[in-house]
Amino acid sequence: MEKFEKLHGIAAPMPLVNIDTDMIIPKVFLKSIQRTGFGKNLFDEMRYNRDGTEIEDFVLNKPQYRDAEILIAGDNFGCGSSREHAPWAIADFGIKCVVSTSFADIFFNNCFKNGILPIVLPQEQVDTLMADAEKGANARMTVDLEAQEITTSEGETIGFEVDAFKKHCLLEGLDDIGLTMEKKASIDAFEAKASAARPWV
Image (cartoon, rainbow, N blue to C red):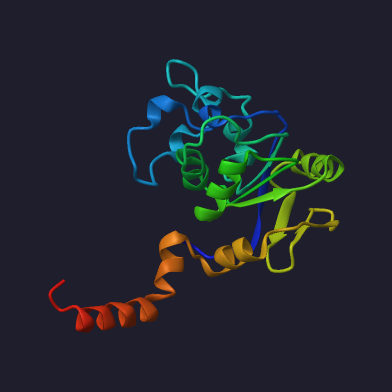
């Protein structure tokens, strides 16, 4: 997993509330357990017409937001089923940070496990970021995880809270496997000791 330290990028405004995981990645695309390849179907039913052509007025289809790395979203983002494909699709598209007033718990935790920083802020501050994002590609935001701050294109700074352990994992690029591998020396020592004590196993 890539380390998340400081992100300076385009923020896309998506003020819809209750965006569920089926809207993020429809169930028809859940045919793989690989983490890659889902980005092209992110928000599929909102991005494409039935004939596969793009819906021009959908935010991520607009030229100024095609390379967005930050998503400013409405309340209760990631509700619905617990599918981990939802953060996979978001990450594969290239979005590394999602800001909302609230997230579904499972989606929220799955984001951290997949290198995405979900940030919870009060409505007033989300509104400020939403308005900044609506300015387009020239209005780039900076998300500094170490300092726990978002800086708007106008230089306004907004602080945010994040669990210390989850912050550590993102800063170091550690998913569940990476966390286990941090204990590799201890695991190897335990296995060597167990093997010597019970060579018949």
